[in-house]
Image 1 (cartoon, helix red, strand yellow):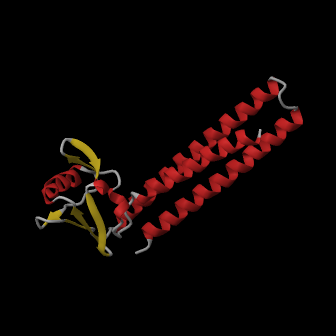
Image 2 (image 1 turned 135 degrees about the vertical axis):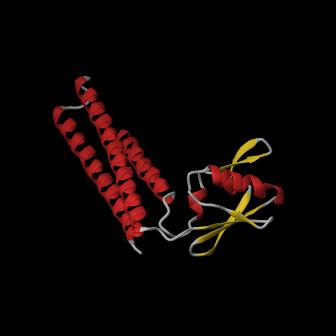
Image 3 (image 1 turned 45 degrees about the vertical axis):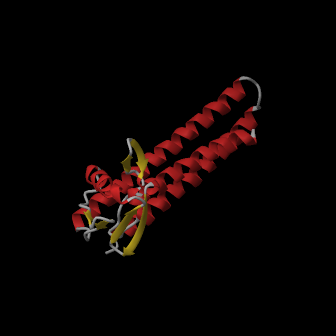
Length: 184
């Protein structure tokens, strides 16, 4: 029984991890190398993650420096960044690509905060779906006479406590990211 609850808890944990990864990709006015996590570069015909073909550093608070291992990759990296939905224009000096992040406008901050809340709601829905699956599993166990009515009630309470804990964690993550975005 406990190992099954642990499986449901692990699924909820993965939902939180996924949410945090999504939040890492939302820029808050500061340069963050994780913004480039989803960018793939054509490396001799193979789409490769940018981190595997270049070194990414943060020389200043609002700029990223991308230094490819091979100078020939500069053009490919520039092309990949332009094709992405980052909305940034890369500049290159022949050896490296520089990304400068403009200061966020008030409207853009509000838009990003709304996006963060939406992603948080999606994470809550995912956690609730896991709760539903767990409760269905408990009901099946009860129907098959694997657990008594009292044990089933106790398991459902455990599932609800898990759900409440993870929903609170989602709220905490959303609040922290919103604060980061709206802080000027």
